[in-house]
Image 1 (cartoon, one colour):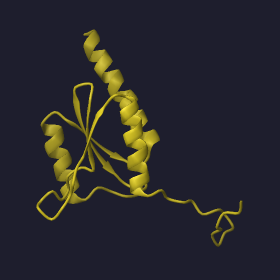
Image 2 (spheres, helix red, strand yellow):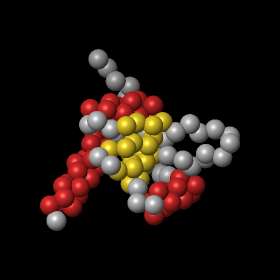
Image 3 (tube, helix red, strand yellow):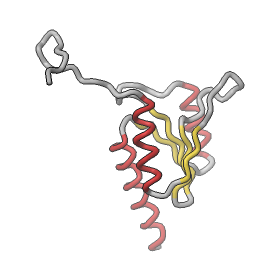
Image 4 (tube, helix red, strand yellow):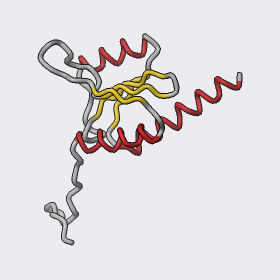
Length: 117
């Protein structure tokens, strides 16, 4: 299969859609037994709210999805991040299911370390 080429003759890197990343992450979290709650963003004031909220092992986890690592959270999204974290929740900016999986391994390590104390 031939991939589209850039001017320098390297294959173009196809950036996944945010919805595809979200689906893969939802599947990952389902396999881990998490409760999944999509956040409906509309014109009634939910701007900046995270794309997904998960409840996993007693933790409130908010996730903002982006198509690539080069995309940044908006000022309003960062405000929500601060509010969530100050309330004791976790907030992540995620651009791949592999990244979310790594974050969950780190989180589980933290939870397990706290249990041992």
